[in-house]
Length: 146
Image 1 (spheres, rainbow, N blue to C red):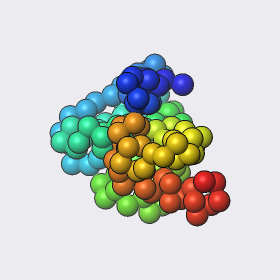
Image 2 (cartoon, rainbow, N blue to C red):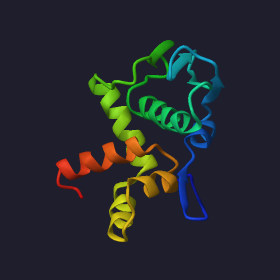
Image 3 (tube, one colour):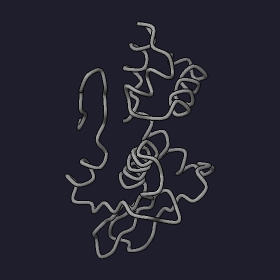
């Protein structure tokens, strides 16, 4: 796994994984949070540079999820373009779950909670928003996984 451990932080680097897979990454002003596009078997992930760095990290991981779970690279076109952040389709929920797991692994959340970390400290450790940690832990609790 491409993760960086620095001074109490655990940061999965989705951008580097995309680049390692030969996927182009474009972080520039967009009218959407993120998208996956393919042309002639080549993929590019686009992320909105106007979003916060934390939001961009989640979007990169989310789009990596789409690429691995839902995209046939031989089919050219724009496959996913998140404009509302709602995650209201099965594929969007799956990409959100993928991003959540690689950015905030279940086992690490469990261990951090055992030693007294809260949502705020885990958000800092993982480099995600407090809301993302709360959503992730809430889901894990509701499924009996925490």
